[in-house]
Amino acid sequence: MYFKISAVFIAGLIFLTSCNTTNEDQTTDNEQSMVTLMNVDPGHFHAALVQKNMYTEVNDKVYVYAPDGPEVQNYLDAIEAYNTRPEMPTSWDEQVYLGDDFFAKMLEEKPGNVMVVSGNNAKKTSYIHQAVSNNIHVLADKPMVIAPGDFSQLEDAFRLAKENDVLLYDIMTERFEVTTALQKALSLVPDLFGGLVEGTPEEPAITKESVHHYSKMVSGKPIKRPPWFFDVRQQGEGIVDVTTHLVDLVFWECYPDEAINYTEDLELISARRWATEINPAQFEHVTQLSEYPDYLEGAVVNDSILEVFANGEIVFKVKDAFAKVSVIWNYEAPEGAKDTHYSIMRGNKANLVIRQGEEQNYQPTLYVEPLGSKMEAKPALETAISNLGAQYTGLTFVDTSNGWEIKIPSRYKVGHEAHFAQVTEKYLEYLEAGSLPDWEVPNMLAKYYLTTEAYKLAHK
Image (cartoon, rainbow, N blue to C red; front, top):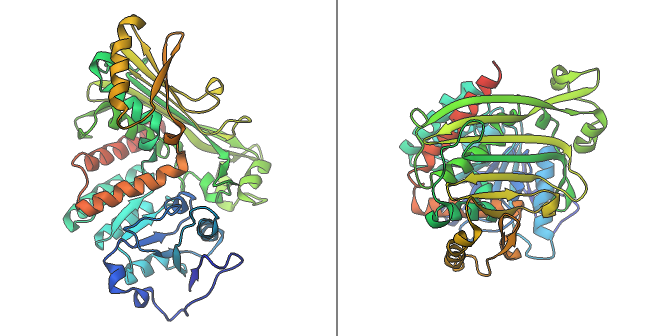
């Protein structure tokens, strides 16, 4: 079944065509020359965030293929909200096919040239593999793979993408968080940071921890999560899900523009997993379901408590540096708080630390903490901040008891939702260039090799 969602009608959906009309019939030659998105099974709110902004290179008409149900409706409602907001409304023209054969229908019609996939992760690796096999570019939400047995299929997908001259890329939003970008930039200043220490498994050279919450606000509204989000066989355990962001940042910050070879440059030290407990009332609040689905039965303990193995920690060595990444899922943040990030990069002259606790008003804040004299380190910081001023106008620093806090103008603190547009814009640049940077593909493979191997180790 096909229908169109427009910016004019908020109350409902306008049916444009019958089941006998194909998306291919609606595609013009001009549209084919643009980037045209095919959004497949948009069951996660990240699918809508890719379309929170318009892009000059992207066709307004977006082709959606999905099973019928509340998840695709939530996505369409989000697009309608973007299309009808008073400030900077979007103008997406959603052409929707609903049916259990949605993916086969997408491959048959192929009205676009870029598949966006952000939803149930159980079949995502297969969808990616089939898309690149059919000469379709892919912009995939993380994670690309959640089961160790599917890693070889992902590896083959990258081989096919190269062979078919299409770009396979995952959405790594955290590279665009300004404190992280500045942490990386300052680590590249030898006079200030020195060099990255090797560290130890107990005190790694770089540590990254993120804390997430099942109940939170997205685009100004309480989030509604699909029930399968709590099924690790469909969403993935935390050790293979959010850790992808953290491992990506370790590679990106410690070895910028360098390829990581997963057979030579990685050593897995330890991995562990643990569960978050969700009670029936909490589950109902975020899913709007009064009962657990049957597929969650095996995860229910003590008659009613749902155990979700959403938490994980990986300690590993990449090239010459030890690293630790961990992800924690709580039900709800304390009042005034939100998802948070902690990170430390240890240099032999200074540490660069991102904190986001109560003292920071739950805003990510970057600190420079010299290991020696503040007086001796200050000129190097002044020079570094001055040099960064061309890119970050108004960047300054203030004293703290053991170093400095980097003061970042609010215009650079755009927030997590805005990072999806930044990633998409970067991907569009790569499409225009016809290739990814040389290091991106090996580093994606190394990232997913590490997370899936950590999954195996944590289950032993």
